[in-house]
Length: 227
Image (cartoon, rainbow, N blue to C red; front, side):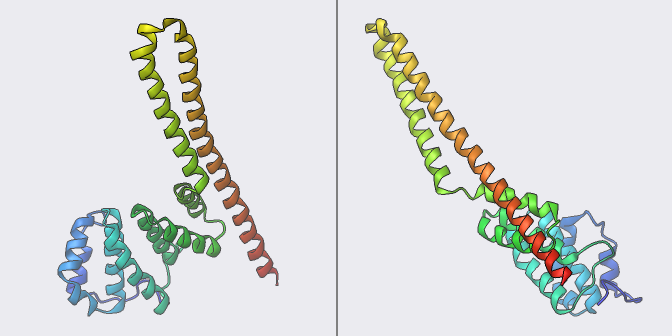
């Protein structure tokens, strides 16, 4: 079904088209005030307003509501076999923004799943690939949590040593000041290494994991095309 093909437009649709495309809040209010009427219009008019409403929810940051409504738009694309404008894939755009809303709602597993589907559809979707890496970096594995916990413990220990140094060592045992300074600097340094090393190793593993996965999907798609 073409994205839009009718030559006659209802008054509701004409009023909608009078709203600036970037006036997202007004689009939201317009759709919600007239939702029953809009749902009764010809599909082409209804669908264009639905997509504008869904995108407006995303743009203003109403991510929970966006997640509810984007599923409606995606379902309509599939069921009605809606054609995208030239050079675009409406289905992929909706999926990408759905993943972004899951990410904003801290639902990283769901975001990860959708991005994988997008990459399987288009293994050269660079935005999805980059976003997947970002999502996986937020999904911290156990070793990174342990590295952070170790760093926090060492930072607290260094703070304790500093307190002892200031309150006890310097006033009464000045001859041990150098040893205490070296000790707390060493403890603090190990804490920094634990934190930075854990973060860098996690980032490296994410990069390697995603690149291997993308290359595998590309090879599989190429093999299917050759058959």
